[in-house]
Amino acid sequence: MAADRALAQRVDALAQAVVAPHDLVVEKVDVRRRSGARVVVVTLDLREGPGSLDLDRLGDLSREISAALDGADAVPGAYTLEVTTPGVGRPLTQPRHFSRATGRLIEARLRDGARVLGRVSGAEPQPDGSVTLEVAGSPRTVAYADIADATVQVELRRVKEDD
Image 1 (cartoon, rainbow, N blue to C red):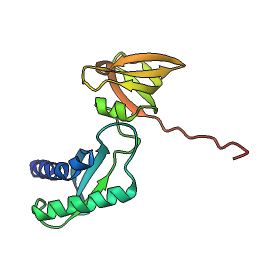
Image 2 (image 1 turned 60 degrees about the horizontal axis):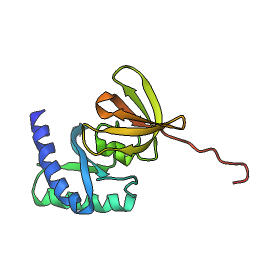
Image 3 (image 1 turned 135 degrees about the vertical axis):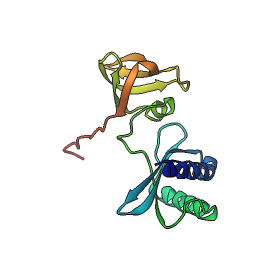
Image 4 (image 1 turned 60 degrees about the vertical axis):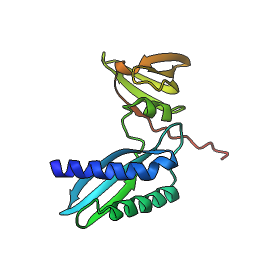
């Protein structure tokens, strides 16, 4: 719906202004309808490097974004604001995503159909660059252009008996 896209763009601009001083980015803004009510979902992420947003910081940012939206009367009528992070299942689609996954295990499906499972050891910031993965103990460089899709893999650690 065009009105929801325009609303998402307004929310994105206001939210970007709130989070930029915190070295964060607005990853995505979705405007949805849930049981007839409007829900605005703002997904935040760290600008770069590994790490995550803790719940207290996310709560503070949610209040700041809410105040900015209300102050600008950006969302007409009643709405629910949800501020979240991308989560582990987010597709890695930008160089920044690969950089943020440094040290993490990822699976990439290449455009030629091959699959690569490896740990990110380096990522170039430019879109025409590449990511370096440790695959079976050896480095492998893959151009971003050769990656059809990629995701971080969840690793569950076994608890040792003496722990």
